[in-house]
Length: 441
Image (cartoon, rainbow, N blue to C red; front, top):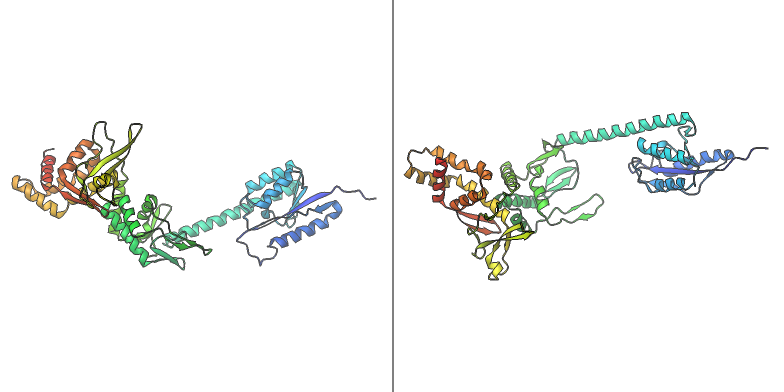
């Protein structure tokens, strides 16, 4: 009389990664299940029975635990519904040594045996455990080597200036994995860079872009779904203005390489825009109590209606939160549909400062200043006058707000503000006065 064996409930787990083909031997989940089922049948005399529940994970990587069938299997183990797990190969259950070790601990806790039918071992023996750990270590090593090769190939392609995928950007189309200029969009990109270089204000630049209907790129993804371009905001505008792809370069891990694509923006325009961005990113000066926070008070006018742009500000808990120059015509209802009812004060002030620095050093202004100074002080060499004016820029941030205000009012006669930017009218006599002050300092 033969002894009656206790029934061993066997669960079959199968998995197939998305990158695996369907034409390889024993690669599909159906073939994995068939092999495991045959093995369980061969152990019928030992009391093995195959559970009817199917634990199949199609299209999931073995490097993650987030798999529906695996989650269900582990839950059934904890509920005492499984005595043995059968897989075709151990990497079907996991490719991660850390994850697999955690699962083996769970199996041990609930008295569950793990069987790999093609690798001839099970976890009930010490030799089986040793073999299991060795195989898993090699599987993880192979996976990490493959990942490193992919990263190395990606980096090498970047160094060669090749486009390595991702969302297409405004101004370029992707053809045969290469960037090709889209002329219509390229004109939009040039407009954005040119407008920002002229006005120095993100707010005014965005307004001009909206008027022209410029949005982020509309494109079709790999699955054929159309992605409609969204309107730009300050963040996406800043990202576009800093993207070195537009000057024919690519960046990889902080390193810059010449690209294999054609540039849209000239180096000169790029440098000018980056300098303006750097100026705009400087922190605002702290304004002491009792001192005016509006250095351009009385100088700014709305070019649309000709009325003054008066300072306004919002406060919270007694602290200034936002500062604006507001069109008095729009505020009083005299001007309808004013395109610039409120403009952030910081935008205008940085713009004016940048233009003052540029204009003060322009040949025309320098010629007039030199002529006036030489008429009164013939002994001062021309190169000293030029040097004195150039010395203003690097020390500007070190000046107290009241001194900044005084110098701006000394140098600027008036400012006409429009959607296109700011038109400055300099006080040449004020520049003459400044030269004398700098010389005496």
